[in-house]
Image (cartoon, rainbow, N blue to C red; front, side, top):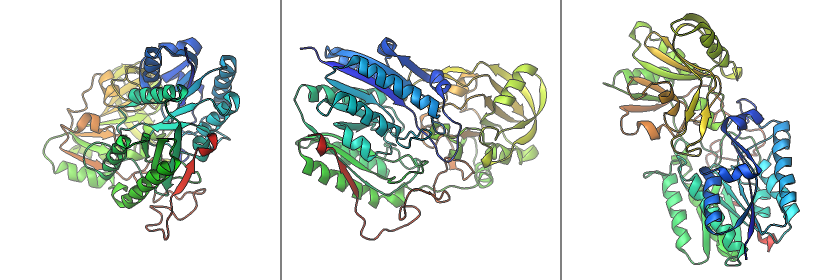
Length: 504
């Protein structure tokens, strides 16, 4: 008997400290497919899921697939449009045997704190209690009670940098098919503790503590009755109640085992909290240290302006520190998002010299523009293609883009913030970022994809912005104390535990 599976995806990450609002145009610049066009997707979580469903001979009811670069909150109009389209298409598709929802888990919409939980709950109301729903999430998800109680299973990405979006889609589709066929009875428990740390020490490669915790969790999948394990390093830049990281276990009908293993993993996560917290230095200190090192590149990680975490990418804090060197300035590369200056460069043409105010136009709370003379070197339409990661093979769009020179510093000025996977944006404009003394990277993890083999040094910077290395200086309004790192120790700590036992 052919099974009928509905698939619908809304995937982005939001920042409540800053960034630009995400509207429908953001999704159009990345990935936005409706109905039958969803079936053409061959990469990412949706592509991986479709591969498994097709090979299994399932009939797929495609709803929509919407994904985009992180930013501020999703606008109310945009979210309502995506939500209503997904649900209306699902209503037209029922009856179905199962629903697969590739989501992120750290989105926020205007007026809706938990879009993923809202979507899962709305889908549950349409299909009823007995129809399996499986959702995939980023490992930086803020997993909520509504997500857990309304899904038969949640599965998270296993790698950071995120290399396994497609295989996570495959895992989600296989678990859904097994559930529909009655081969398993997914019972899920989430346990989390109030640890809110950034991503700098959250890689899954090497010997770091998060990598060890992830490996230990994945090894638990070899145990009897364990169907899936996930570890969550919660997205740091949300101001929500019940934030925290920990473990989520899906077992075959064994709620007690799921609860115990998830709680053990959450305790392990709490014990590693100090190792997961990051340190940073001022741009001036990092530049001084870099000048004392022979050769390059020296990577300056301006994590506080990470578009991959929802920032606008318009900071010039590190550029300002580099230019303060005057005649001693070495070669350097800096990315800045500034649509007004990019437009001015296109109007002026290659070779033109302009006096501009650069930066801090999109999210001005973090600094003031830099008044500077520039010479236009390169003009570009901003199109580039991702080579790996979440959007492997997808066309990215920086919008009208220019490369300008300020002495020995070259600045890549784009019109739109884009997610940094490797060095695709630099290569699109004909620049190899490895061939410079200083290079500013505005992603706390994915710079490893470019510079690990060649960097002479890497320095993490402490600059103003909505995606800092640590939230110690970002007091949360809705997250109740105590939590780490605001509080170092918590007496009689007990993990928060939620289950989906009510579905059975």
